[in-house]
Image 1: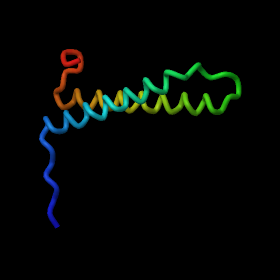
Image 2: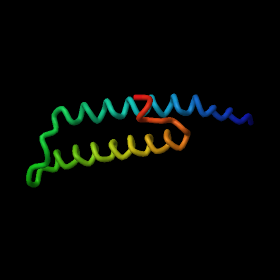
Image 3: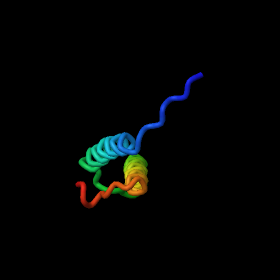
Length: 76
C-alpha cells in the first residue's frame, strides 16, 4: 500500500485559506437572516450555535495558518 505524499507547507496554506474563505462565506450567509435569539425559540438557538461553531472553526484555521508562518494581517 502506497502512502499519499504529504502536502508541502505552501499547499497546506492554500488548502486552509480555501477552507477559511468558504467557511466565512457560510457565516456571512447565516448572519443575513439571523435576528438574534428570542425567548424559547429553538430554531434561532440552533442557528446561533451553528454560527458560533463555524466562527470557532475559522478561529482554529487562523491559528493553524499562523503556526505555518502565514501572516493574516499582511496578506488580507
